[in-house]
Image (cartoon, rainbow, N blue to C red; front, side, top):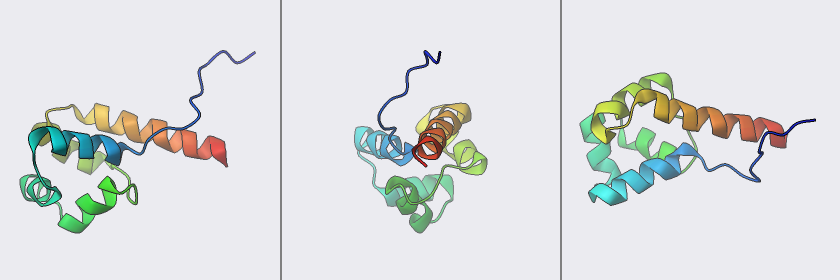
Length: 86
């Protein structure tokens, strides 16, 4: 018997990035400049079109003040939920 909670959907971690940008009143371009990532990469993440990789998580860590494992865990949960759908 599986007693693990399975939410009906899991948000892409890009939604959390967007929330952090709004809280800081930053644009995606601000985040791109601060992390050294391209604006296109940030846009893809924010729109759920690209994953947060280990490299990206490490770049987000000092800028968004959340540990890399936070970002990677969000991505892992999202990936698992997507795999379960299929």
